[in-house]
Length: 364
Image (cartoon, rainbow, N blue to C red; front, side, top):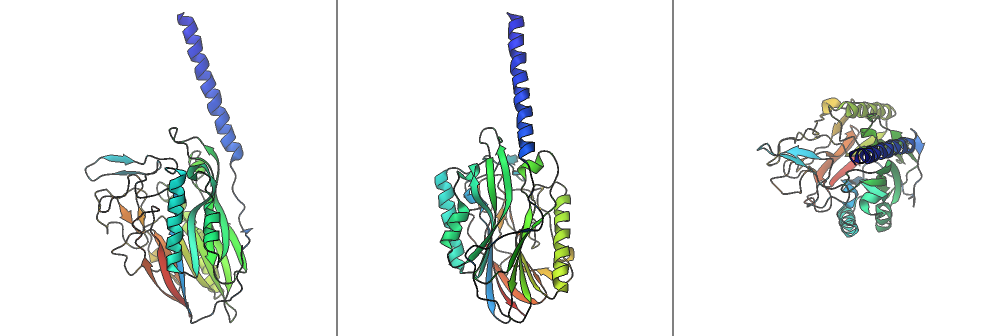
């Protein structure tokens, strides 16, 4: 009887090992990266051209795939309370389809309220298990009919069977750029990413989206939407991503073009690492960027209310003001031929783990 039980046990172990090996092979076969310099089309293209001396408004907002209501925590986020208690997020997907629909509708309303000429939206799911197959790209484009839109896929994964209690699943997601003005070209540039075995499956196919808009008089406005890496121990990958951005900045400045880069930088971009009250320690993922890190002629537009309103919260615990760690990682970089001012919008993290940022700008 003991020998029989041993054989059964070994058989189960062998079956599990074969299943695990097959799953690894499946993930590896499904893995790919989208080509660099991929051209992307504009849906509902607009024809009006921009001009110098006119005030415009641009908004950026990471909508967190409609999952991050204020009571939500994410399994990949970890932190520590000031009393030493370790914290880890719980969920691998949104709480429910109804929650995704409600949060996406809330984010759409925030977009509408600002009446921006241009919008950058990150973590927009097109088809994903984590958001119960709610097509957020469709909801946003239909809800913002007066804009041309461009979608850049930056997360396409096979079925991620982790965390085991609530698998993240398969994902097709990306960034959306909206414009009320004519766009002549969109190029998806590939960012360097980690090649570590696990990370390459769980992190995004990081990229930035360059959109060229003609300006009356001959020059161009180059809009660059970014979403830098977050889970990058030591910050080495993010340093490589910034180096590529700086190279593009320098090239466009040399041409005399106007440049606005914006989105989720996943870095403290406003010296806010310890600005906001919290009962948590500063998380390990928070790295800082300053103007010294940028190409010549470029600077961050620090929001006028940067000391009052953060743009990102830690997702290792549900949000509670004054308890959960918060910081500013969202905003804009501009070239020195643009005048601008910005403001962080306090959405109280109701629909996402981010708050929106709005910038008013004028091309000199």
